[in-house]
Amino acid sequence: MKHKDDIKKLVERFLEGRTTNAEEHELYEWFSTADVPEEWSNLKRMFEWYAAGMPADSNDTSQHKSHKIGTRWVSWAVGVAAMVAIAVLIFRDYSTKTEIDIYEGSFIVAEGVRYDDTALIEQEIEAVLLRADALERKADTLLAWANL
Amino acid sequence: MKRLLIICSLLIAGVTSSHAQEHIDALLTRDIEGNRHGMTLRSAVKRDPETGEIIKRVYELSAIDHKSLAKEFIEAFKRDRESADVWDESENGSIYNVTAVWQNPKRVYSLAVGGSMVTVYAQTIYREEKQSK
Figure 1 (cartoon, each protein chain N blue to C red):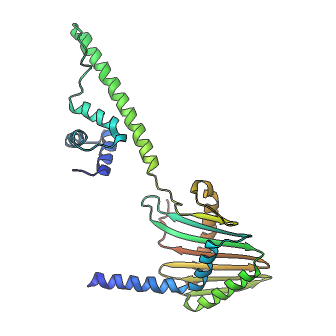
Figure 2: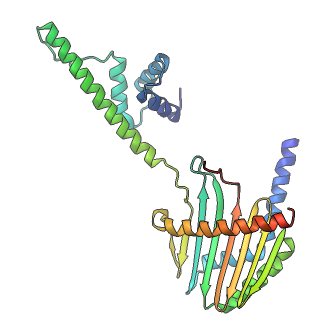
Figure 3: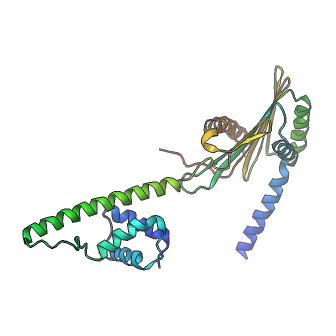
């Protein structure tokens, strides 16, 4: 059984249209059998729908075959578009949440009060790092002079 | 066996480096925990945006009207001087500057004292940053 992160990558490739048939079937199988997380319920519905051969609305009882085909095609297209849009939104949100905070662990203590919300102190942290860079360049020069 | 030797070397290097700046680090730790009036401590961590691994950590302590603190840091720098790979000391007018460098991992410490103002930098560079093209 593949790990959730592998499945996520596979879904991203699927949404970009870069998966092979075998990989698509792997996704269908995973979403139909695995313990799918709640936030992926829309993806589960989408892949189950694909796995079932993308059935049209089961209540469609039209007697006119050509109209029926047209209706199926439209509902299929609308369904796919909606599912893809939902999947893209889910993954955009997911990737934003898992983005690495490059300043995580930074903090400021001023007058005895500690601030560690990196979004709020980002500018100050960047200023400290700039000053530190200048100091590091000086250190490199000193090391070069000392042949170290 | 080779792996054991590497681990031992790393442990020895870690222990050695953790004692190399012990007097300065002790003062910094004291001032992080007991930050006082007129004192600001900034701790900046920079991580690799892809892996989250720490690239460098910087402590910047600035204090005004703490003449005794200036003396304490000057003393601590002097006591840790012997273990430094590079030591640079200068006096420019009323400002006294020290830069000390240790290697593996690279640590750059600096002290500037002028009048009643003290600024201390202590940075550890765990690895070089990837240069953006």
